[in-house]
Structure formats: C-alpha cells, structure tokens
Length: 317
Image (cartoon, rainbow, N blue to C red):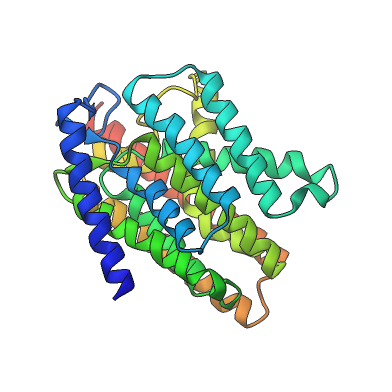
C-alpha cells in the first residue's frame, strides 16, 4: 500500500509539473537534429530527483547520494530552461562524483584508481544523456537496470530505494513511452538518472567484488563509444547534438517505431543482464568471459550498424 501511494504521488506530481511547464513554456522544439517532429513538454524527468528525495526522507538513501543527484538535477533543469555554459554543468558533475566517492569510501582506495573511476562515471553520465533521443529509450533502459540490480541478493537492503526509483520510471513512462510523447525527460531527468545508475553500478561492483556487472550497461556503452569514434573519424564535434547513434538510424532513416526500438534496446539489455546474473551464479562470470562477451557484442553491433548504413545508402543514394 505504501508503494501504491508513492506511485500515485508520482503521477500527481507529473500532472502538476505539466501544468507548470505548459504555463512557463518549458518545451522541446524539434530541429534538424531531433528525432521528433512535434513540440513536447520538456523536463518530465524531474520526477527522478524528486523520487530520490522522497526515498531520502523515508530513510532509504543517504544524504550524500541524494545531494549528488539533486545537485545535478537542479543545474540540468536550469539548463533545460535556459542553456548554461559548460563550466557550471561540469562543476556540478565533479561535485556530485565527489559525493559518490565519499559515500562509497573511494577516497581510501589507491590514488591511481580515482581518476579512472572519475572518467568512467563522467563518461557514463554524458553517454546516457546523449542516448536520450527517442520516446521511451531512457526510461525503459533505466528500468531495465533497476530491475536487474534488484535481482541481486547483495542489493536486498537497497530494494526500497530501487523500488521507489523504479516506480518513478513507470510514472514517467506512462507519459513518455507512447507514439506521441506527452513529455521528454530533459537533461534534468537523463543526467540525474544516469548519476544514480552510475552510483549503483559502482556500489554493486564493490559489494560483489565482481567487475562483470558492468555488462549491465553494455548496450548503451557500445553504441555510445562506437558512435563517438565514428564522429571523431568524421571530424565532428562530439559535444554537439547529432543523429548518429544506431537507434537514431533505425528511427529516423529507416522509419521504425520509436517505441519499438526503445523496447528492443531495453529487451536486448535485459537478456544480457539475465545471462550475466546466471553466469555469476554458476561461477563463470570471469574477467575472460566479460572481455570475450564485450567483444562479441561489439562485433554484433558493428555488423548491424554496417548493414543499416548500407541500407541507408541504397535508400538515399
């Protein structure tokens, strides 16, 4: 009953936010780089930092993680309304990562490890944000990760937090996972959720002493990294919005349903996560397996990407 009440609260908050966004014209106007064609309310992902704030008041999450998520959410929401320079956004990310390091006691680890984790976490947050381009992809992928984390026995104590965040995804998804979305997550949603998932990934790896769980983010990771490499080879500015991800090719150039593609991405990742959990339970989730599996996924991705780009050339000679 408590979680049902929380879910209803999330729905009410979203509906109230829609009134505010409509009144103050907080909208996402389509441009040449967009995958949508209609003006849509931006910032519906504000429910994610609100969810973690509720979890904090219920005693399910620490003040440091709550502050980290809320900080990047506030700065990102301002950026959604009025674009900010790169510096304040980067500073908020650095402070947030520092709070995560504090929460996970990483400052006591070898000094050489901190820059590596810092770069990976900042990279993940930005990759997750850049992948937010079509209806449903962000919230379904986030929900897939949350569900997967919930299946691990080491995260049993964190189930109330994971359930709360999962319910916020469902509430947002009702208005986003549809042919004509009522709202988009905005940076406030994608960046705050990315930071939360990044924190939980590091926590899971530390608690389990199992690096293989990083495969939970493999679909996004491979698409983001290879897309960046392709853009660098084309001498493009990788910090500018674009339509070069594989899912964008499917949605924009091939004309497939946005929601269908989002479900395929989330479903494929969920299948991988199930395999990872099974392999760990059997004791086979070794470093060798992880590297081999990543290589296999990368080869599959490259084959599909090459097939799609050739089809695009034939379709638009």
